[in-house]
Amino acid sequence: MYLYDQPIYILSENTRRTSGRDAQRWNILAGRAVSSAVRTTLGPKGMDKMLVDASGNVVVTNDGATILTEMDVEHPAAQMMVEVAETQEAETGDGTTTAVVLAGELLSRAEDLLENDVHPTVVANGYRFAAAEARSILEGMATPADEGRVLEAARTAMTGKGPEAAKEHLADLVFRAVEAVRDADGEVDLENVAIETVVGASVDDASLVEGVVLSKERMRETMPRRVGDARVALVDAPVEVRGTEVDAHVDLSTTEQLEAFLAHEESELRAMAAAVTDAGANVLVTRKKVDDLVAGFLAKAGVFVVQRAKDGEMRALARATGAKRVSSVSDLTPEDLGAAGLVEERDVGDDTFVFVEECAEPASVTILLRGGTEHVVGEVERAVEDALGVVRVAMRDDLVLPGGGAPEVELARGLREFASGVAGREQLAVEAFADAVEVIPRTLAENAGLDPIDSVVALRAAHERGETAAGLDAYTGEVSDMYDLEVVEPLAVKLQAVEGATECVELLLRIDDVVAARASGGSAPEAF
Ligand code: ADP
Ligand code: MG
Image 1: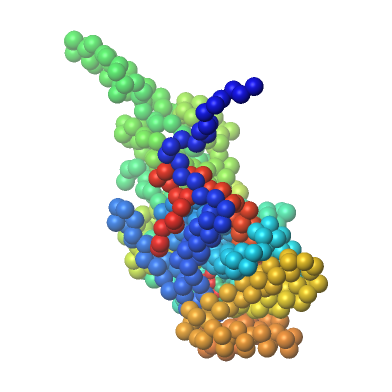
Image 2: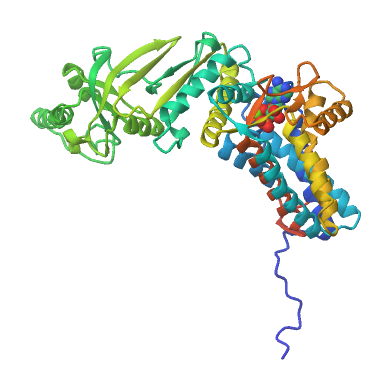
């Protein structure tokens, strides 16, 4: 009955295997390394990081998600932490640092429990109970968000991120942008809000364009600079005579043949231009190249042509104007055209843009950001992206929380109370969870140069007195009512941070065997 008398190798020689406590220890270490990499950026007084990639590009940022995507994280457990940030970013647009720092602290507290022989499954279960309770505590303390509160949330999201002085103005733009693209059910697709950046001028000069802005120029000076009542054609293919650059071998031995060939080519190109005008278009935007002769014919016919638009720009145009993208000019029909009240080329700073405004479907807006240097504009853009996410979820749920660590202190208090009712060793895990969430106010205090212990003690006292909105003023170090300070965050951001962090930690705790091909991680995590 013995089929084999040799041991069977199921793993190649090149794999490395870590199991049991070792695997857990390494995973926890790797996860914590990621969290400590972003920890110092939390809050308005958080520091920035300068990231340099292999080709020397520099990004200076305070944005957790950006830091983690730019860092080349290799260890599989560390990658799971990066995914926490990515999910947070995708779901809510803000709170990435919070989620990752929280996950790191949950891991660290779990490690203590494991050292004391609490089984990982027990820890994972306890954390899950705690997260469920956390949801109801947070929901219980949330307050309705009117327009003022939503604007405050937008400003809070941008605090400490660069556009400090222009926060008010930018929050207003973000609010108007989200409102403009909100559909009948109140749903907001942020795909409909484009951001264009222009280096030059000040951050205050940012503006909102109701429509689409292409960072392009019209093909010829002789084309009209401004087209009212635009009928827009969108073509995805090149507008040129095909085949010549492909191995089409043409035998032209006589002048007549050459002339005939050129005449034929020209008539084909003329036909392409005619297809555009015959359909009734006075604006043509193409994804690919437009032949110079065609551009010349179209210029003569008064058509405004933009070539080589980006796919995203084509999509935005299709949505905004109602145009149908066709794959060849000769297929154009009047029904394929979209409409816009105005298409105009304008200079903004040193750059030239094509503005497509007064669209049939105004569900497409563009925020035009300005700033002195590329780094400034880049950081303003990331801040505005966070604010867009925040306004979207705050408007969707109409619920906000006070910021400045207030929800975390309230959570810790509520969870400690809840823990006493939890049977078995899971109780220890719930208590550990309660301690872990206080990492947020502690870190806010640390990053603001305050004593974290004093700050947390003062916060706890305020919450014991029933001041649920008491948080840490990162500028004065005082414990204050965060609603009075207008430091507010959407409920959804906090819920997602707690749930995303818990899920990741739970997954990591359940792993007790890492089988990794060599060269990838699986053992000692890289130090940051
Ligand atoms: P995240 O990536 O998690 O959003 P941030 O660096 O944006 O990280 O910091 C968010 C934290 O900073 C939140 O807890 C928020 O309440 C807090 N915060 C924002 N503004 C203030 C302020 N003026 N005082 C204290 N805390 C603040
Ligand atoms: Mg933030």
